[in-house]
Every structure is written in structure tokens, then in C-alpha cells.
Amino acid sequence: MAGRNYLRSVVKFGGSSLADAKALARATSLVTASSPNLRRQHVVVSAPGKRDDADVKVTDLLLAAQSCAASSDSLNFDHLFADQIAPRFPNINVSTTAADIYDRAQNSNKQLQSIDFTVSRGEFLNGQVVAQALDGYDFVDPADGFIVFDPNTRELDLSATLDAIRRTVGKELPERNGVVVPGFYGSIQGNASDIVTFSRGGSDITASLIAAALDDHDVLHGFKQASQHSSFVVHENFTDVDGIYNVDPRIARAATVSASLLATVGYNQCRAMALAGASVLHPDAIVPLQQRNVPIWVRNSFTDTHDDPAVDALDSSGDCFTCVQHVELDCNGTNIVLAICSQQNIITFVCKNKVKTTRIVELIQQLTRAIVKQSSSTNVEDLSIGQEDLSWKHESDLCFSVEIDSGAVGPHIDQVVGLCFEHVMA
Image (tube, rainbow, N blue to C red; front, side, top):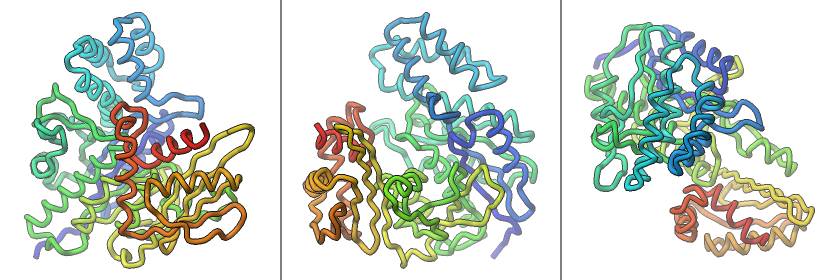
């Protein structure tokens, strides 16, 4: 069987890793620092993230511009683009993008397509910024028949997408060359005028699909057998944390819970955590890599210590389904902190208010049909929940289908739990 003496990495940079010029320089230096044994030639980018706590995400600015355009408020639309959106994309002419957003928003018959187009422009423009900064790297627009959606369902056409990726970027690239691909979106059957987006955080899915397609390419060309653990492809997900923790460190500080970095996490455990609201990886990004045994390395863009924290199949038998979630509210002067930290199929709710905790448990019991196992202290409730009960996420989505469809809450359990809190505290 043929071999390759280097590892092909599909690199994804989140918004925080590309938030400003300094972060961009750091990210591009990580790409060009590829070694002979590790080539970072496939780069997926998100829209620029928040530069500080008071900042507004580019995606939200674009949605505000869309709203102005839909109401024919050209003055505020122009101000938004000139003063807040354009400066986030240095050396990129955004005038054509602005005109396209405005024109599409005027067509009331295609509001869904218009919104998808608008929110995808953060990734589209940022991809051009990163491609400009990387000598020898070409910009690939995922709407040009690269990420393909079905015209009837507007859902991802997985087979067509993997074939398209293999054809476009699957071949071996010269050592100092590569491609930059905006994450988060694609198009209906390659029709670049009909954009479709994944849910928020969907740049992870784009990177996952590219890594899966590269692995398929290796199988077709004899580098590996389909059942083998991938020795030639890896997905590196760069973010602003050191890896995956058993508890969100912010929750740990607020609820006096110990947070530990997990050196190796199984695919099933990682997906369970993502479905429960952990935000390091999108849940839909796990399965394509799990099916091909492609490892995931979660790395911090801002540190120099890059051991190989991995999410792979090697230790999946040890999955303990550690899930984390957190909501803070100030209700009648009471600060509420909830942490869900499950291990060995027990979920623990940590809350500063016993009465509020009990009511929250009752509500989540209603959604999940979980059973209260014990009350170990005056401020902790433990629920028994097993791997087979992961359908609770689906049940929660059904409970709040109207709110999800209207955009009042997102499709993942973190927003759903937030809505639960609002309901309980009303």
C-alpha cells in the first residue's frame, strides 16, 4: 500500500482567533509554521469574533444591516457598513457585498435566502482577508459547487459535497501552497446566488467535511484502508481555550467546581457534550470524522504549548459523558449559577438557591423524563441519565419548536435551557 511521509491538516480558526490584526497575524504564522511532517494547507475560517466584551459580532452587525435594508433605511445601512463592518475586513472592497445585501433584502419573496446570504458574508469576506495574508494560498468559495445543499430539503447533500471537495482540493498540493475556505455556508447545487448556511458555529462542519473528503481521497488512492485509524489526515480546531474541559472554566469559578483539561476524549463523549451545550465543537462536526477515524486536535491559537489534545476513537470505550451547561440570572437580587457536570451517567445541578434548583430540576425532568436519584446536599440535585437518554435534546427541541422556528432560541440545548430558566423565573 502506498504511503505519505506527512500529515495533512485541515485547520479551522474560530472567530476569536481572527478577531483583529494581531490575532490574524498569529493565525497566519501558525499556518506557515507547518513542519515537513505536518502541512496546514487547508484552512477554514469563521467571521471575525468579538475583540472585547463590549464588541458586537460581525454576524450580528450584518443582521442589523439586513434589517435596515429590508425597511429601506439606506442611511443607517450605509453607516453600519462604513463605520462598523468594512473596518473589520482591511484591504477588502466590501461595496459589492453591501450592494448585494441591500438588493436581496428588498425582495420580500426570498427573505430566507436573503438572510442566509447576509449572515454568510462575514465568513466570505474574512476568507479573502486570510487568503491575502497567506502567500500561495487560493480562496475557494464554498458556494461554487463545493458545499452542496439539496434543492428540495435545503439540507446538506453529503455525497455530492464530499465528491466536490475531493475533486476541488483533494489532490496533493505543493508544499508551500494551500487553500482558504470560508466556513458556515454553501449553496443549492452549486448555484452561488442561492446560499444556505449551517447553524451558528457551522464553520466546524465545513472543516469536518473537508477532512472527511481528504480521508476518502486517501482510501481511493491506496494510502489507507477505510477501517483504519487515519494516519494521514487530522482536523486541528484553533480556538481561545487549551482544549476540552470536563467543566466550562467560567462555570467552575462561579460554582466552585474543579475544571480539568481532558487529554483525550472519545467521539461519542465529545458529541454528547456538544449536544448538551459545550461550545468548543459543533455537534454535527463530529460524525463525519468519527465514521473515518480522523482525529481532532483542539488547540489554543494564543499559546505556544501545542501538545496534541485529541478527540478520537482510541479511548471511546472510556467515555464518561461529561456534559456541561451554565446559565446565570439575577432574579430578585439572587445570582443563579447552574452547572451540569455528568460523570458515570449522573448529572449534577449546582445552584446557589435550593428552591430555584428544585424548580429547575422539575422542569428539566418534564423535558427529559430523567429520575431524581438523590439529594446529596442542600444545594445539589443529582439526576440519573444514561447514554440511551440523549434523545432529551430532541425532546427539548420539540418542546420549543415554535421558538426555534421563529429564531427566539437556537437549535441547541444551551439556548433551550436558557429559555427554561426564563420560564421558571417568570
